[in-house]
Image: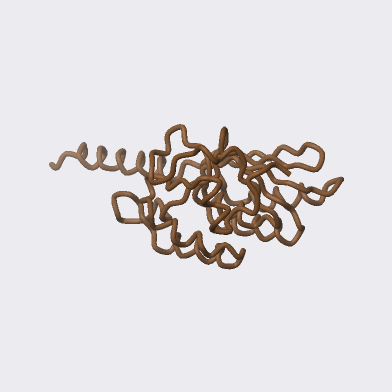
Length: 202
């Protein structure tokens, strides 16, 4: 009689892998204060609906303050479109906050894009650990077959939104770092490329 233990073990490992892949990320947190919304955390499906509901509450929103390492590109793109349609500005404080990966799509939606305290930041590919500033990298997907989860489709989706928001120069930055790193730019570089419209606070 064939032992069922190897199959049970394989099933357990497969179940664990499935659990890890399907474990939902903590959704973004939106905090509204007067005419400012601060958005932090991982961008997940449904965040665009939360953001839409916030825009419809009370007084007009003027600035969205960003602190996110990225997440799902599609909801990020929808948030970016709502920001642009509403005439809202975006802000990243490069001295203490990060806006990387899909978050840069949201940043691009601002009718005015403030990237402050970023003049002294070093540029180039770097670790995600303790990262601050604007960070770009190739798109990735948990379903991708490559070791670093590179996804050409996700990369193309980000670039599509960059073009839509009029910051097509960002397309050249996503290819400068693999999914496991960020390529950071300084305030001056962001300004010269048209990714930021100001390096001073509003």
